[in-house]
Image 1 (cartoon, rainbow, N blue to C red):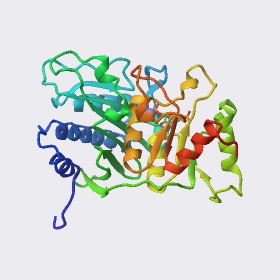
Image 2: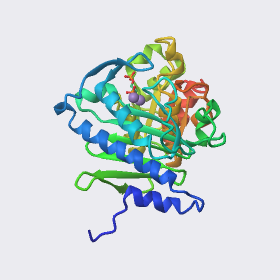
Image 3: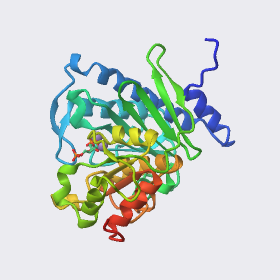
Image 4: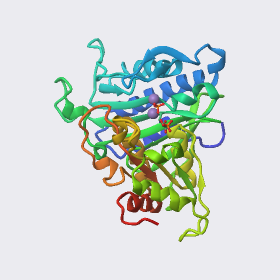
Length: 340
Ligand code: AHG
Ligand code: MN
Ligand code: MN
Protein backbone atom coordinates (compact mmCIF):
# COMPACT_ATOMS: atom_id res chain seq x y z
CA UNK A 1 0.00 0.00 0.00
CA UNK A 2 1.86 3.08 -1.31
CA UNK A 3 -0.06 5.99 0.29
CA UNK A 4 0.38 6.69 4.01
CA UNK A 5 -2.63 5.17 5.80
CA UNK A 6 -3.55 6.58 9.18
CA UNK A 7 -5.23 3.71 11.00
CA UNK A 8 -7.06 4.11 14.30
CA UNK A 9 -4.26 2.22 16.04
CA UNK A 10 -1.56 4.50 14.58
CA UNK A 11 -3.65 7.55 15.54
CA UNK A 12 -4.00 6.40 19.15
CA UNK A 13 -0.25 5.74 19.35
CA UNK A 14 0.47 9.20 17.90
CA UNK A 15 -1.89 10.82 20.46
CA UNK A 16 -0.22 8.68 23.15
CA UNK A 17 3.13 10.39 22.48
CA UNK A 18 1.67 13.42 24.32
CA UNK A 19 1.61 11.30 27.49
CA UNK A 20 5.23 10.30 28.29
CA UNK A 21 4.09 8.14 31.20
CA UNK A 22 1.66 6.21 28.98
CA UNK A 23 1.78 2.47 29.66
CA UNK A 24 -0.10 1.38 26.57
CA UNK A 25 -3.19 0.42 28.61
CA UNK A 26 -5.30 3.13 27.01
CA UNK A 27 -4.14 2.16 23.54
CA UNK A 28 -5.07 -1.45 24.29
CA UNK A 29 -8.49 -0.39 25.61
CA UNK A 30 -9.35 1.57 22.45
CA UNK A 31 -8.12 -1.38 20.40
CA UNK A 32 -10.51 -3.64 22.34
CA UNK A 33 -13.39 -1.23 21.66
CA UNK A 34 -12.49 -1.23 17.96
CA UNK A 35 -12.59 -5.06 18.00
CA UNK A 36 -16.06 -5.03 19.55
CA UNK A 37 -17.16 -2.50 16.93
CA UNK A 38 -16.00 -4.82 14.14
CA UNK A 39 -17.83 -7.78 15.68
CA UNK A 40 -21.05 -5.79 16.09
CA UNK A 41 -20.73 -4.29 12.60
CA UNK A 42 -20.34 -7.76 11.11
CA UNK A 43 -23.56 -8.93 12.77
CA UNK A 44 -25.50 -5.72 12.12
CA UNK A 45 -24.67 -6.00 8.42
CA UNK A 46 -25.92 -9.58 8.29
CA UNK A 47 -28.70 -9.19 10.85
CA UNK A 48 -31.48 -10.39 8.61
CA UNK A 49 -29.53 -13.53 7.64
CA UNK A 50 -28.36 -14.65 11.06
CA UNK A 51 -31.66 -14.95 12.87
CA UNK A 52 -30.30 -12.19 15.08
CA UNK A 53 -33.10 -9.75 14.42
CA UNK A 54 -36.11 -9.34 16.67
CA UNK A 55 -36.82 -9.66 20.34
CA UNK A 56 -34.54 -11.60 22.62
CA UNK A 57 -37.37 -12.27 25.05
CA UNK A 58 -35.62 -10.46 27.91
CA UNK A 59 -35.91 -6.96 29.34
CA UNK A 60 -33.21 -4.41 30.18
CA UNK A 61 -32.92 -2.35 33.35
CA UNK A 62 -35.63 -0.01 32.06
CA UNK A 63 -38.09 -2.82 31.48
CA UNK A 64 -37.63 -2.34 27.72
CA UNK A 65 -37.78 -5.46 25.56
CA UNK A 66 -34.23 -6.42 24.54
CA UNK A 67 -33.51 -7.05 20.89
CA UNK A 68 -31.26 -9.99 20.02
CA UNK A 69 -28.68 -7.53 18.66
CA UNK A 70 -28.83 -5.60 21.95
CA UNK A 71 -27.79 -8.75 23.76
CA UNK A 72 -25.17 -9.68 21.16
CA UNK A 73 -23.67 -6.18 21.16
CA UNK A 74 -23.57 -6.13 24.96
CA UNK A 75 -21.75 -9.45 25.07
CA UNK A 76 -19.36 -8.32 22.31
CA UNK A 77 -18.43 -5.21 24.33
CA UNK A 78 -18.08 -7.07 27.63
CA UNK A 79 -16.03 -9.95 26.20
CA UNK A 80 -13.78 -7.63 24.14
CA UNK A 81 -13.05 -5.33 27.09
CA UNK A 82 -12.91 -7.77 30.01
CA UNK A 83 -9.53 -9.37 29.50
CA UNK A 84 -7.28 -6.59 28.19
CA UNK A 85 -6.16 -5.55 31.67
CA UNK A 86 -7.03 -1.86 31.15
CA UNK A 87 -10.30 -1.69 33.06
CA UNK A 88 -11.31 -1.90 36.70
CA UNK A 89 -15.04 -1.58 35.94
CA UNK A 90 -17.59 -1.53 33.13
CA UNK A 91 -21.12 -0.08 33.15
CA UNK A 92 -23.61 -1.00 30.42
CA UNK A 93 -27.11 0.22 29.63
CA UNK A 94 -28.06 -3.48 29.55
CA UNK A 95 -26.78 -4.33 33.05
CA UNK A 96 -28.34 -3.05 36.28
CA UNK A 97 -25.08 -2.94 38.25
CA UNK A 98 -21.39 -2.37 37.61
CA UNK A 99 -20.09 -5.35 35.60
CA UNK A 100 -17.45 -7.14 37.72
CA UNK A 101 -14.16 -8.17 36.15
CA UNK A 102 -12.75 -11.67 36.65
CA UNK A 103 -9.99 -12.00 39.27
CA UNK A 104 -8.27 -14.37 36.83
CA UNK A 105 -7.18 -11.47 34.65
CA UNK A 106 -5.19 -8.29 35.33
CA UNK A 107 -7.21 -5.11 35.88
CA UNK A 108 -6.30 -1.50 35.17
CA UNK A 109 -7.17 2.07 36.06
CA UNK A 110 -9.87 2.82 33.48
CA UNK A 111 -13.66 2.65 33.71
CA UNK A 112 -15.86 2.34 30.61
CA UNK A 113 -19.54 3.22 30.45
CA UNK A 114 -21.29 2.13 27.26
CA UNK A 115 -24.55 1.89 25.39
CA UNK A 116 -23.80 -1.25 23.38
CA UNK A 117 -26.51 -0.67 20.84
CA UNK A 118 -28.22 2.69 20.50
CA UNK A 119 -31.38 2.98 18.41
CA UNK A 120 -32.57 -0.58 19.06
CA UNK A 121 -36.04 0.19 17.74
CA UNK A 122 -34.45 0.63 14.31
CA UNK A 123 -32.57 -2.67 14.13
CA UNK A 124 -35.13 -4.68 12.14
CA UNK A 125 -35.90 -1.88 9.67
CA UNK A 126 -32.31 -1.41 8.50
CA UNK A 127 -31.88 2.11 9.86
CA UNK A 128 -28.47 3.24 11.21
CA UNK A 129 -27.76 2.32 14.83
CA UNK A 130 -24.70 2.78 17.02
CA UNK A 131 -22.54 2.07 20.06
CA UNK A 132 -21.58 4.86 22.49
CA UNK A 133 -18.67 4.72 24.99
CA UNK A 134 -17.23 6.93 27.71
CA UNK A 135 -13.92 6.36 29.52
CA UNK A 136 -12.76 7.64 32.93
CA UNK A 137 -9.69 7.06 35.08
CA UNK A 138 -10.49 5.65 38.55
CA UNK A 139 -10.06 8.12 41.42
CA UNK A 140 -9.59 5.59 44.26
CA UNK A 141 -6.29 3.69 44.65
CA UNK A 142 -5.70 0.72 42.33
CA UNK A 143 -6.05 -2.69 43.95
CA UNK A 144 -9.03 -1.60 46.06
CA UNK A 145 -12.67 -2.34 45.13
CA UNK A 146 -14.19 0.20 42.74
CA UNK A 147 -16.56 2.65 44.48
CA UNK A 148 -19.38 4.99 43.45
CA UNK A 149 -16.75 7.74 43.50
CA UNK A 150 -15.09 5.97 40.55
CA UNK A 151 -18.19 5.18 38.47
CA UNK A 152 -20.22 8.35 39.13
CA UNK A 153 -17.77 11.02 37.99
CA UNK A 154 -19.05 14.17 36.21
CA UNK A 155 -18.64 14.30 32.44
CA UNK A 156 -15.77 16.81 32.55
CA UNK A 157 -13.62 14.01 34.06
CA UNK A 158 -13.87 11.86 30.92
CA UNK A 159 -10.48 10.99 29.38
CA UNK A 160 -12.06 9.70 26.17
CA UNK A 161 -15.49 9.47 24.53
CA UNK A 162 -16.65 8.03 21.24
CA UNK A 163 -19.31 6.32 19.22
CA UNK A 164 -19.57 3.83 16.39
CA UNK A 165 -22.27 4.31 13.77
CA UNK A 166 -23.36 1.25 11.79
CA UNK A 167 -24.74 2.89 8.66
CA UNK A 168 -23.94 2.96 4.94
CA UNK A 169 -20.42 2.52 6.29
CA UNK A 170 -19.22 1.76 9.82
CA UNK A 171 -17.49 4.76 11.40
CA UNK A 172 -15.80 5.22 14.76
CA UNK A 173 -15.64 8.82 16.01
CA UNK A 174 -13.65 9.66 19.16
CA UNK A 175 -11.97 12.37 21.19
CA UNK A 176 -9.39 12.34 23.99
CA UNK A 177 -9.70 16.11 24.47
CA UNK A 178 -7.47 17.04 21.52
CA UNK A 179 -10.11 17.36 18.81
CA UNK A 180 -12.58 14.95 17.20
CA UNK A 181 -11.46 12.33 14.66
CA UNK A 182 -13.57 10.01 12.47
CA UNK A 183 -12.42 6.63 11.15
CA UNK A 184 -14.19 4.54 8.52
CA UNK A 185 -13.96 0.74 8.65
CA UNK A 186 -12.41 -0.68 5.50
CA UNK A 187 -13.96 -4.17 5.38
CA UNK A 188 -11.35 -5.30 2.86
CA UNK A 189 -8.65 -5.39 5.49
CA UNK A 190 -10.68 -4.86 8.66
CA UNK A 191 -9.05 -1.62 9.80
CA UNK A 192 -10.52 1.74 10.79
CA UNK A 193 -8.95 4.36 8.50
CA UNK A 194 -8.85 8.10 9.28
CA UNK A 195 -11.49 9.65 7.01
CA UNK A 196 -12.60 12.73 9.00
CA UNK A 197 -9.63 14.51 10.65
CA UNK A 198 -10.41 17.33 13.14
CA UNK A 199 -14.24 17.35 12.83
CA UNK A 200 -15.76 20.78 13.58
CA UNK A 201 -19.53 21.39 13.93
CA UNK A 202 -20.86 24.54 12.19
CA UNK A 203 -21.78 27.26 14.74
CA UNK A 204 -25.38 27.05 13.53
CA UNK A 205 -27.29 24.76 11.20
CA UNK A 206 -30.59 24.29 9.35
CA UNK A 207 -31.54 20.99 11.03
CA UNK A 208 -33.51 20.48 14.23
CA UNK A 209 -34.13 16.95 15.49
CA UNK A 210 -37.08 16.48 17.86
CA UNK A 211 -39.79 13.84 18.27
CA UNK A 212 -42.73 16.13 17.51
CA UNK A 213 -45.19 13.44 18.73
CA UNK A 214 -44.29 14.52 22.27
CA UNK A 215 -45.25 18.18 21.66
CA UNK A 216 -48.30 18.15 23.94
CA UNK A 217 -46.24 16.72 26.80
CA UNK A 218 -43.53 19.40 26.71
CA UNK A 219 -43.17 22.51 28.88
CA UNK A 220 -44.35 25.74 27.23
CA UNK A 221 -40.80 26.98 26.55
CA UNK A 222 -40.01 23.93 24.40
CA UNK A 223 -43.38 24.25 22.64
CA UNK A 224 -42.59 27.91 21.88
CA UNK A 225 -39.23 26.86 20.40
CA UNK A 226 -40.94 24.46 17.98
CA UNK A 227 -43.54 27.08 17.03
CA UNK A 228 -40.64 29.47 16.28
CA UNK A 229 -38.92 26.76 14.21
CA UNK A 230 -42.11 26.19 12.17
CA UNK A 231 -42.51 29.88 11.24
CA UNK A 232 -41.47 30.58 7.66
CA UNK A 233 -40.18 34.17 8.13
CA UNK A 234 -38.17 33.61 11.29
CA UNK A 235 -36.01 36.42 12.60
CA UNK A 236 -32.87 34.59 11.52
CA UNK A 237 -34.27 33.80 8.03
CA UNK A 238 -32.93 30.21 7.97
CA UNK A 239 -35.41 27.81 6.38
CA UNK A 240 -35.03 25.14 9.05
CA UNK A 241 -35.75 21.49 8.32
CA UNK A 242 -36.74 18.73 10.73
CA UNK A 243 -34.79 15.47 10.62
CA UNK A 244 -35.45 12.76 13.26
CA UNK A 245 -34.31 9.16 12.81
CA UNK A 246 -34.96 7.77 16.30
CA UNK A 247 -31.34 6.66 16.68
CA UNK A 248 -29.49 9.21 18.80
CA UNK A 249 -26.11 8.30 17.30
CA UNK A 250 -27.41 8.73 13.73
CA UNK A 251 -29.18 12.03 14.46
CA UNK A 252 -26.14 13.32 16.36
CA UNK A 253 -23.63 12.25 13.69
CA UNK A 254 -25.55 13.98 10.90
CA UNK A 255 -25.83 17.20 12.92
CA UNK A 256 -22.14 17.02 13.91
CA UNK A 257 -21.10 17.01 10.25
CA UNK A 258 -23.78 19.33 8.81
CA UNK A 259 -24.68 21.54 11.78
CA UNK A 260 -27.95 21.57 13.67
CA UNK A 261 -29.46 20.55 16.96
CA UNK A 262 -30.95 17.50 18.67
CA UNK A 263 -33.37 18.00 21.57
CA UNK A 264 -34.89 15.32 23.80
CA UNK A 265 -36.46 17.47 26.55
CA UNK A 266 -38.24 16.45 29.72
CA UNK A 267 -41.91 15.63 29.24
CA UNK A 268 -44.89 14.83 31.43
CA UNK A 269 -45.77 11.70 29.44
CA UNK A 270 -44.64 9.54 32.38
CA UNK A 271 -43.05 9.82 35.83
CA UNK A 272 -39.59 9.04 34.39
CA UNK A 273 -40.17 11.46 31.50
CA UNK A 274 -39.64 14.41 33.84
CA UNK A 275 -35.90 13.71 33.60
CA UNK A 276 -35.99 13.12 29.84
CA UNK A 277 -35.38 9.75 28.21
CA UNK A 278 -31.67 9.68 27.45
CA UNK A 279 -29.09 8.47 29.95
CA UNK A 280 -26.42 10.78 31.34
CA UNK A 281 -23.46 8.40 31.71
CA UNK A 282 -23.46 6.54 28.39
CA UNK A 283 -25.45 8.74 26.01
CA UNK A 284 -25.38 12.44 27.00
CA UNK A 285 -21.90 12.75 28.55
CA UNK A 286 -19.86 11.06 25.79
CA UNK A 287 -21.68 12.97 23.02
CA UNK A 288 -21.32 16.19 25.02
CA UNK A 289 -17.54 15.68 25.25
CA UNK A 290 -17.38 15.09 21.49
CA UNK A 291 -19.59 18.03 20.53
CA UNK A 292 -17.67 20.47 22.77
CA UNK A 293 -14.38 19.26 21.31
CA UNK A 294 -15.89 19.93 17.85
CA UNK A 295 -16.91 23.49 18.85
CA UNK A 296 -20.54 22.84 19.80
CA UNK A 297 -22.31 22.61 23.16
CA UNK A 298 -24.59 20.38 25.21
CA UNK A 299 -26.88 21.12 28.12
CA UNK A 300 -30.06 19.89 29.77
CA UNK A 301 -31.64 23.22 28.86
CA UNK A 302 -30.24 24.87 31.99
CA UNK A 303 -26.95 23.19 33.02
CA UNK A 304 -23.94 22.12 30.92
CA UNK A 305 -24.24 18.32 30.57
CA UNK A 306 -20.62 17.65 31.57
CA UNK A 307 -21.03 19.68 34.80
CA UNK A 308 -23.89 17.51 36.08
CA UNK A 309 -22.92 15.49 39.17
CA UNK A 310 -24.23 11.95 38.59
CA UNK A 311 -26.21 10.26 41.38
CA UNK A 312 -26.96 6.89 39.75
CA UNK A 313 -25.58 4.74 36.94
CA UNK A 314 -28.67 4.88 34.72
CA UNK A 315 -29.98 8.31 35.50
CA UNK A 316 -31.75 10.15 32.71
CA UNK A 317 -31.29 13.75 31.59
CA UNK A 318 -32.99 16.12 29.18
CA UNK A 319 -30.57 16.76 26.28
CA UNK A 320 -30.04 19.79 24.05
CA UNK A 321 -26.94 19.16 21.89
CA UNK A 322 -25.38 20.47 18.69
CA UNK A 323 -24.33 23.76 17.09
CA UNK A 324 -23.44 26.36 19.73
CA UNK A 325 -25.81 29.10 18.48
CA UNK A 326 -28.70 26.65 18.08
CA UNK A 327 -28.25 25.29 21.62
CA UNK A 328 -28.29 28.86 22.93
CA UNK A 329 -31.59 29.58 21.15
CA UNK A 330 -33.25 26.47 22.60
CA UNK A 331 -31.97 27.33 26.10
CA UNK A 332 -33.47 30.85 25.82
CA UNK A 333 -36.86 29.31 24.99
CA UNK A 334 -36.69 26.58 27.65
CA UNK A 335 -35.65 29.18 30.26
CA UNK A 336 -38.56 31.39 29.08
CA UNK A 337 -36.15 34.22 28.27
CA UNK A 338 -37.90 34.47 24.93
CA UNK A 339 -41.24 33.27 23.56
CA UNK A 340 -40.74 33.93 19.83
P1 AHG B 1 -31.52 2.83 23.00
O1 AHG B 1 -31.86 2.09 21.75
O2 AHG B 1 -30.08 2.68 23.42
O3 AHG B 1 -32.48 2.54 24.11
O4 AHG B 1 -31.66 4.39 22.68
C1 AHG B 1 -32.82 4.82 22.06
C2 AHG B 1 -32.91 6.31 22.24
C3 AHG B 1 -32.10 7.10 21.23
O5 AHG B 1 -31.31 6.33 20.41
C4 AHG B 1 -33.14 7.83 20.40
O6 AHG B 1 -32.75 9.14 20.13
C5 AHG B 1 -34.35 7.83 21.30
O7 AHG B 1 -34.28 6.65 22.08
C6 AHG B 1 -35.63 7.80 20.50
O8 AHG B 1 -36.66 7.89 21.46
P2 AHG B 1 -38.18 8.10 20.94
O9 AHG B 1 -38.49 6.86 20.16
O10 AHG B 1 -38.96 8.24 22.22
O11 AHG B 1 -38.18 9.35 20.11
MN1 MN C 1 -29.24 4.58 23.48
MN1 MN D 1 -29.07 0.89 23.82
